[in-house]
Image (cartoon, helix red, strand yellow):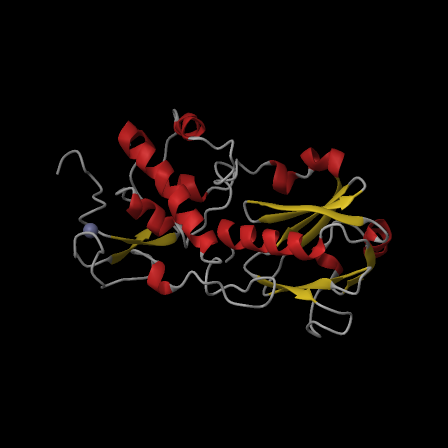
Length: 277
Ligand SMILES: [Zn+2]
């Protein structure tokens, strides 16, 4: 499933290819993905110009000027692919945009996703994106902001990190190495975390996500050019490495159930009760 690094890489590549270009045509093959009738979306988009492209959490925000934003959620995964010419691109897709200069892009959801068009001045009323917490790599998301976010919160730290209303963009792939990097067991109650552990966790969030972006995001997702990301299995520290030695201490990495998700941890580096052991 795409997480923050995959979306950030896509947004950057899309901006490079599409920004500033007028929209010449839109083809909708799965109206269920939309938040309005296909004709209305096609009419609204046609002739407008692609502006800034950013990501927040698991959403892409494509500014369509003047006045609109196209919101794309890739769901469990999708091929969102650049088309170099009108004849380029896959035959199977749910949504295609063609631009004035002949380039464009297609979206094929693996399972289901969303393409919503909203007026930019009404973005706040788009419930699915307006309830998202701060993006984990937003410049405004400082250590101070993270400390405040955790203040007075209950529950387990992993569930907190995965809840997109708290922090947007972390899913059940990168979270393993994020917690390992801070030496924190996924089931630690938030209230048991020391100030030093919170600081370490903040640093680990940024370190892991930035490293993934730097490598071109996860190998199991495709970028805008259909290439797999460069962040491979070799780069995981403990994620998906059950039975292998911990890179810090050599203890065998274990896979445990944590509520509805599984977690990969080093039982030595990430004790559940660090203050009593
Ligand atoms: Zn270890």
